[in-house]
Image: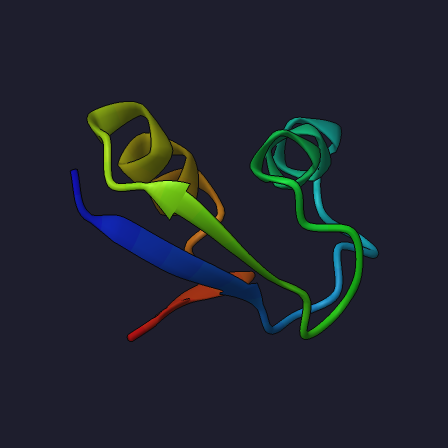
Length: 58
């Protein structure tokens, strides 16, 4: 399975609690933090939920 790298580019301050919990579930702790996950539909759904706070790094 392919891997994707997800980078947090915007602060979680002011974001709704559900979006903060989604960032925690992805493993993103702070700004400019990069994590690597399998490219699955569930991970893609989480990224879509917080798309304004993260980017996909190639």
